[in-house]
Amino acid sequence: MRNSSSIRKDPDWPWWRMAQDRSAPAFTRLRQSHAGLVISEIARLGPWLDQFDREDLEQEIWLTAWRALPRFEGRSLFATWLGGITRNVFHAWLRKQRGNQQLQLRMVELDGVEREIAGDDHVLDQPDLSEAINRLAEKEREVICLRYFDHLADREISIQLHLPLGTVKGRLRSGLSHLREELDESIPLTHPEHGGSYSHSECSQMPNSSQSPSR
Image (cartoon, rainbow, N blue to C red; front, side, top):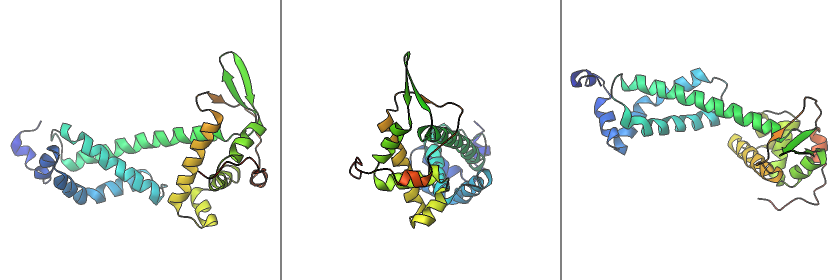
């Protein structure tokens, strides 16, 4: 830790010391003072992010800072430390998002998806997966079809369905979660290297006699 006289040169020193003692008002003061720093750093690191993701990421950064603050020793200015927290959280968040996207793509692959079960191969064919999608609530099936079969971006779906962007993202998350349940996520899924998929028109024409009640 730097000597006390050096630490006191940090303009945020009184506030982060009180926040280390879990003073919520002091932490709120820090957050208000450095909100612009975090927002601008997120914009620099992820200029392609939409407002929904930026706000989600901003909340995660401040939560991480609150948890890590008791270990801050004042070896740098608080603003410098917060900038490092922001970059670390952003890169961890980005790795998680990429992993989720890969999982989502596996879950909606509609041609030749295989289940490998302890020495007994079982093929999950198109009817298996189409029936699982058909059992989703209509509002979830609709956004999944538009996202993965019509290849629309979340914002384009939002415009087409006249829904808030956050609602679209929420329906995608819940739909994919329910789809994982239908397909038994506990069994690893892999897919071969050949293409083919249903179009959105085919997806939307799936019979709905077996559709489960809205979740």
